[in-house]
Length: 457
Image (cartoon, rainbow, N blue to C red):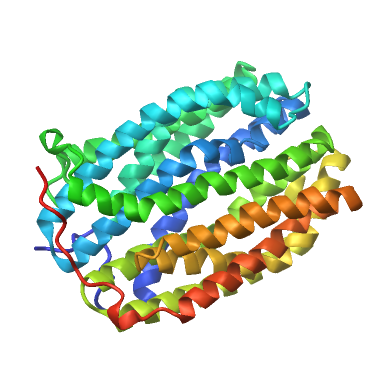
């Protein structure tokens, strides 16, 4: 089977670090463009609407991840399965895995829309969103979840392409969509003054364009990524593997989001300026952390392809190199952010109270970015090894259970905003310890033996 096209990166042969970086660069640029969706919404709303509207948009991340994080985890698991068979040169099972993943995406789209529209109003009340912010939050999420299928299907298609070594095409489609999103934000929010509803509609419309371009490319393609509607089915043998790899990541994404929602609920009790300041910081952190996230997203594909090809030592060396690169990048970015946070926050908010809250949070967490980078990159390596349950346990116990217990107990004794901020580096340390132990115990030479899935009918 021909493994690589002109647009794909050969991760199985050649120098390890240059190969990983060539594959990670388009992912970084794609992640950057995805962040522009949120940044454009935040900037336009922050400059052409009021503080309540900005608070609604800037605090939306955790709630959206609660719903779609589960299905994005399934997509990630599907990508690992595709990468394994791709590395092993098994064309038949690559095709089955692609069509199984695509159909799962369609099912997930319907479920996410229904669950989101039904549950979001109740969740916002449970989160103690201030009454002044609640109408804007409801408006934003109603638009968002009405069109959430566009976001899920793009992530599914992107995972399929990247699993085959093609990280360039998703980048092209995101570039087109990002330009569309910025233009529509300016037209709907700045021009027609439609507020958060206009921002949400612009995001869904732009993401829909990128999803449509991905699907059209797969329908018309002539390589392994080709999509044939007549082959869409949930192949049982493949499905069991996808769920085995994807369910832990999906559960992790959703449950960790619950922990973050608890944190957000406590932030909300400090008022709209705390919501705005923390929300503005989150936008900046999301942008600053993109190089590290890109590395952590590249590692499962690299490790999985090389294990599928039987190149165990190469997989191990690449995993270690990726983790070290991610940690070094993270700490450099953290130091820069520590000293420049006030200037960065002023891009999104212009009130001293909001800037003060964002600055307090940054000065506590930024210097510990190396721990967050280690957790993400180590989790990526373990997922590529098929050990997705380990990151799930590490993240759930640390970023959800311990984080909730810490905030709930310590806020009673120290009822200040800084108490919430310290929850992050403390729980990053906990997850890093668990993941380090797991990596040290890995038996790389016997970690994966290719198996044929059960017969599919």
